[in-house]
Image (cartoon, rainbow over all chains, first blue to last red):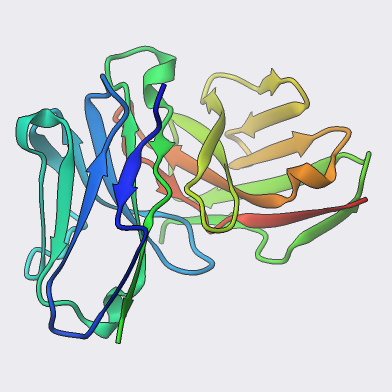
Length: 117
Length: 112
């Protein structure tokens, strides 16, 4: 099966500019996650979707970050305006989310490395 | 405060030896714990999941133990190979939701 697809892989923008990241999860996976990963740290959850519904967005800085998952398939994460501290890798992951032990396994995309100058 | 601690120093071992990585947690009550592998420039890859009522789980050369009394999980790679060199992340979930909290990872270097 095809893996989680993310684009772009790299993005360099100036501060105060907007930026958007796109993710296409594994086909049939109901649950989609956006994570932020800083260098030398583990991923930190930003938002989790079950189908179209954002069921956990408590860690998403809503003043500048937004996300959507229309039709419960692919998803977009946006930052507007970007700040220097937003430089990080943004990871998308998906899981089956349908019950059973294997539903907890998360499959990650390669990430988008964002540099804000 | 809540913490997940993994050794920040890299673990450097000789090929063929067993690598043992540690994950300690504080002020969490995990329902399950997972281990992931991450290579540079790539996303994490799922390796193993162990539930709170399981003591040990194996998959090929990998073994995970889970001690809820010690609040610790150990991750073992037997007969290690240079290709096992990567960063290994532990992650836990406190309930049956799909929300994972990750540690910062331990880098493993296997010398040929």
